[in-house]
Image 1 (tube, rainbow, N blue to C red):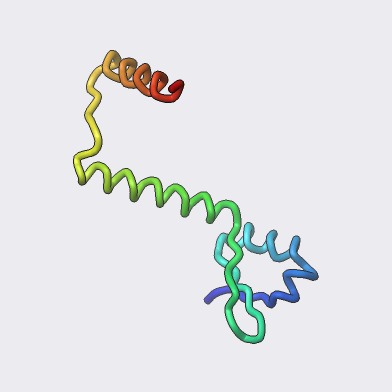
Image 2 (image 1 turned 30 degrees about the vertical axis):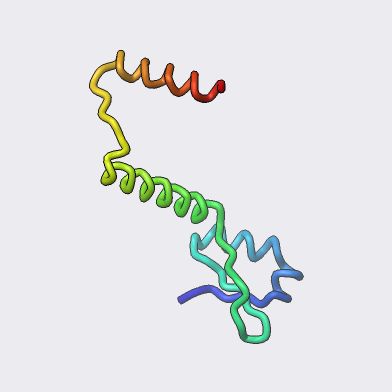
Length: 89
């Protein structure tokens, strides 16, 4: 079950609510007039969502054939060099 707080509670106790979001590692639903307004999540959960999004994109790229195989240290160094050149443009 979701943790729920009122919008007024956020105004009065924002630090406590944020600490709870970080501690429980679950979203806290913000309600106003018995209607959901949004959610507060802790930093660990945010990081998890970001990592999952990156992994999903990487898997999509792999399935679409947009990745390449690097077999040797020389190929890796050459790939890094190419990335440095592109970054400096």
